[in-house]
Image (cartoon, rainbow, N blue to C red; front, side, top):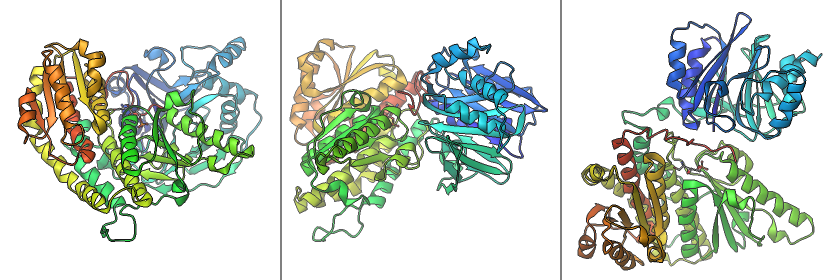
Length: 633
Ligand code: M6R
């Protein structure tokens, strides 16, 4: 939520800041702005709306400044207007601040600052920060290591909430200061130039040497180097690490949208997961698990229960995970919305594994739920209770370098590569793969799966990439035809059962978030308990019907919808005459084991949502009101 960038070095800062913001626009696009320092003056330019508006404003300017900060906003406090756009400045307009996060105590700080004569020009929580820094600067006698650093340090110690900030000052033109508390911030190390950003895509075009700041850390960036401190002012010894990325990964590579490119990357994503976690030479008679996730044995010992916390699409992946963990490994599993779990946690149970699923590794609710779980379990054990209640945490993420990665030692990296489209696609499939691996590993260790079944599933997993390719190759024929007829529809229903119920939810979410069409996902058997009242000829029903346990049930639920005149679209294999008779239209998927089918059935639903949104001329990659990583509560 909101993206911040900063630069100091040898090149003109404006271009670097703008290209950095472009890479972060997925984090918010309500307004954008940059501030630079030139010849002792602060220059701050902001524009409402997307980055292109800011670009236009800057076009006529020649600004050779070599230091600057920038921001792209997802509005929390204050409307998306230019006067609320970042950077925000102090009363004298000598220093500027960009922020990602929320300052929870901004009201009281603002009142105090106003009483002391500070002039406010926005409705944001952020604006208290430049005023506080200015106040500390004017009262500070510190010269070492830098008055600006010291003033920022004092200011951040007054702030409550989550924030990542970057600060420049016209009076200190050779440095900028950054600080982090519960919101991501990465520093990039170039040759004689240094960067900061909310996320690495803004940095990788310049350097692969990065240092993610941790909570309670701040840094001073000059053209000579980076000094890292904690909020108490102690200097810390930190070294950058090398990112295994290349800038091409954050380009569209000929696709019209990032989302389409990411949908097409899915065969490769599944292959990468298999290569990372499947033991190549495994045979049913082998004495070891077919899966190697590299997790500590402590996580698995005497496991009695699993609880999964996540939001949005990651929550849907958690539901598929529950199905697999219960049906394959026989472990009772709960799936909680992180935002609900934080305020109404389930009673503590012994030998419980808590899994946080978050592609970004930065979702505030998921991180807070995991932190709470860790804390309450540790406190319970410290009070002399049984050690079996100790926290056991596992993270499933696409960004092991994220806050989640720093917080939890046991991580399953989903290896999907950076995802730019706001609607999650390839990272969802990668999360499902992580759950297949985890459930199979547990099933093997607990001996809850027959060797032949295990072999069958492993061989099925290996065939998935080619099967996804088949779906992608045939999509134009099936999905595009439908799109012309359905693009103006107002309501959609998605039905699924068993392991494909979460896929119905995911299909509905994809359609809602990028095409703005109302859609609901239901377990097919629940329709007759109420939602069936919604059906008529104007409401298309997309039903996922994969041969297996609930195939006949889904087909008969689909018939119930058909009897109410609904147009029935089946995501189903083509080789069954009953299905062919049931559905008005079919989007075919290969006939695979029902247990593996979610990896395939979600693909046509992603394509359907994408094609409808694109046909409606909508901004597929940056849908309204959304942001890729939700770093506020
Ligand atoms: O980064 P996370 O996986 O924690 O994000 C969770 C949700 O915000 C995310 O899945 C959201 O629902 C996406 N827009 C779905 O496409």
